[in-house]
Image (cartoon, rainbow, N blue to C red; front, side):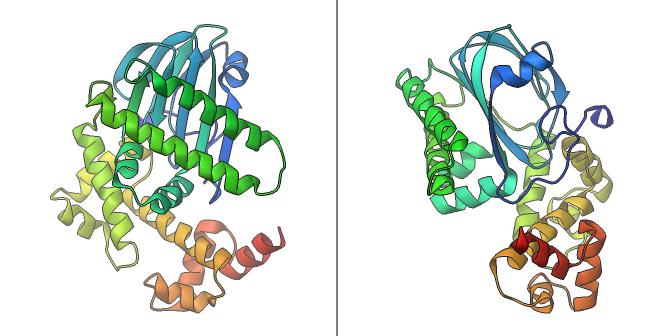
Length: 295
């Protein structure tokens, strides 16, 4: 089944690695109208989505569950949850899509465990959980939309701040729901998320896939199967993507040499780090830094 579920960046566009601070906001009807209000099951391997449905209703597929939802409702979808929608024509709302790395950066800025816990879960939260939240959610999405479509001074700061407020609202609603409307991880998803947590903790260490499997008390074969089912990628590719993300951050936001960055990321040989980066990024670290800074 995993091989038949397409991976997209935005629905209808073939998946590519998200930019470090990628954020996209669009009306629910703008994309759904193109696809006759029927978004087929798909997933994103490094994009997080918040879908705010203010008017209308529809049938929603979230992993192995099919739900009939009536507005107002907020849907929080972390990667790589499979999701599809069949909305009633005329349903209104907004879809906020954010790079997984950007979400992690904002969550770290908050320093709030409740935010981390909420963003790592698939959630569908109706207005019945807290009627007062409807107005707050509407206001936050409208503010983010206003900042998104206007090129004003401090635009990025304003958007980031309001997205953080939105994350706090999601965390509060999750807390209030007391698991009534939340959908906790299945066994496979729980294993995959523990793997991602270990990658985050050890990507600088010389851990092989076998080391991760041992730490998770599973086999390499099972870890590979779960990883491909959940993310469409084998564990080694997920590990390499995380290393590559950190390498890009260092290249963009520090003045460290390429060799220093390689050593920081656990490479004993700077030449091997350069080959690793070029093999995954199709250009050398120096070329990436140069072109990114020029852009």
